[in-house]
Picture (tube, rainbow over the protein chains, first blue to last red):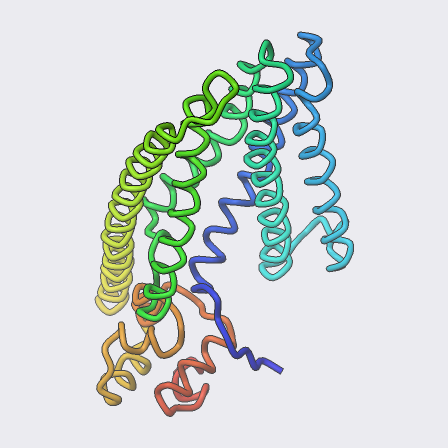
Length: 243
Length: 65
């Protein structure tokens, strides 16, 4: 009944971080709504706010369908277990919304470059949507010590996976930034590839150092938090003994 | 309340918090918090810990009078 072969992530960290992601779902939906209203007032073409509409609809649908499936959709007073399930659903919706915004933004950036360059600056509006939740999640993860590998095994596989993703991300970033140099004046310029390599490598190295630094800080904070909590328990036990 | 029985069982097995954490697939800090009584593990994690320390659930997690 309780048999579970594999624990993908630390259950404590998962539960604690889901609490934050659940709140971030409301933040990202609110930002989507605000940006959407601004765009509607400014009267921009529909393709500039289709991502916000998608997020609002898809995010809400995920919550409704998932909670209906779990049978907790209209349960008002949620106990600890139902609250955990509710937070899992909101985390799922937040994650899907983040992917829609980030991937959609990249696709839209490329499309606008080729077909509607006059609207290109509107892409900045998506930073307003994903930047605040991303910053809040990163800061909280470092502060609360959630940004840790956990076990040795996970550290090895996690590092490998991280480097693989970093290389793909750096290559994409390099090509994206050097795109105008590679296809200058409508023809292919191999020298632009060197620029792409340089851009990709510098971004990759910088991101690697930042991420590893953040993980070190998180590890230290995780230890500090545990020490603090152990101290509090000991203090409380001593007080109880004296009483 | 501190879970001293778990700490004792871990030391008896000659395991550090990190080694036990690796065995059960959680972070070292999580083991620290369970031993400090500041985190209530799920039943599946309790079972994994019991298996790793060769103890029963009662021996490690049932509250003592």
